[in-house]
Length: 266
Ligand code: SIN
Ligand code: MN
Image (cartoon, rainbow, N blue to C red):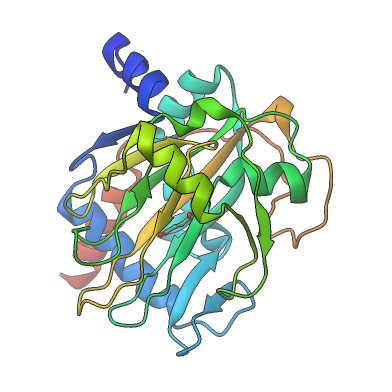
């Protein structure tokens, strides 16, 4: 998949691109099932909300086969290589549950703000690419973006160690209000299997999920190999130390798992 000139211009303007239904329903189902297996694990990488339900499973590509394959999927890796102009490694890998009723807030932040301050990533030559594992709607805690906010560099932030179980450099209300006066606020929504890529400087957040519908999204945070982090302050399964370039698998790599399963069932 190659991003078109129009898509590149749109990314430059807005800071994100949305591709509804980029993965098939079957591919999304394999990953959704894998997410449930991962959430049930009693591992340090699986962080929980105050209620005990899973919030985030970090580094799931290192202990789950479907997520390993997704971590080298060409539909995710190739467009990011194109935008960052070179080979990439995985800086962070998250499966975010935003569970029905109990999924808690993600406060307003920029990912690069945390990566620069905590991990000493030199430049914002890194970005997120995400796949929806459930239908994401206005009701179940969608991601919120301020389009164009990626043009502003690192915005002032405070270290929030209290609001949720995950420490984050977050923006105050005055700053968010001012940014949204210019950029507005959007929530990309769409069916399971949709793909969303966004700049590491994008100001974003998500509200709690009070609905009865879960909202799992898996995020690869990919960084140009020359731009790897310099400081190792966080656990290696949160801010990875393996800077080897990802070699993409075949486009069929998730479908192979589906056919293996159906052969086994025969
Ligand atoms: C994030 O900002 O990294 C995740 C937010 C979400 O999944 O809602
Ligand atoms: Mn984020």
